[in-house]
Image (cartoon, rainbow, N blue to C red):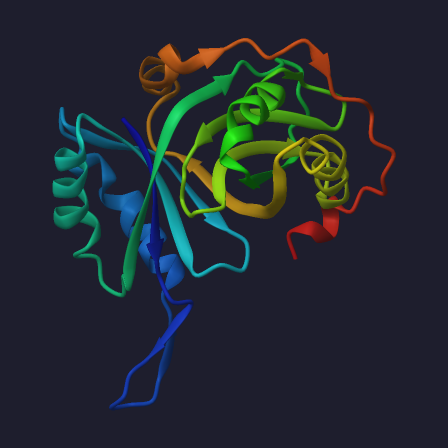
Length: 230
């Protein structure tokens, strides 16, 4: 099973005795970078880590053999990290990683699109988005069911030329679908793969599929990629 684990980490904490405020988000990130290899077992391992822009959390993609194995992993290695304030687990069901173009631009920004949808339309929405082929400005990297709230049900990871391009894509290709009641777009400002390329291929390989045949049209939008990460 794959899970997206969001770790709530305040951006800063104050010492009540001294009044000194310390930035802690980067400390948790660095702690995971330094220690994750020692956490690996046959039952669970961290594959990827991200940070959402302006959010007080760090996210991990974890592969685990079972919910119990995942829970044991979180209790032992994540819950014990200093300054962690909470853990939120999103199960990634029917996860598909799409084979990416070899000539894709290296300067695209990464976003997640979380889709609110009427349950009866979920299957058609999932299939429609999965049928999209990478375009000049937009590349879908993975899709999964999360059922993270009564409304938010599907998460899509997207590489986009800029925030303006992703917003145009969401408007034309997501919000226009029957049954979609809303969508939240979040910039991923920081990412790191925590396994080798060979290990990554071994773990996610069974879930890699070819992209669909419906090409995403070119989007004529102002490229704001230079300010998107500010």
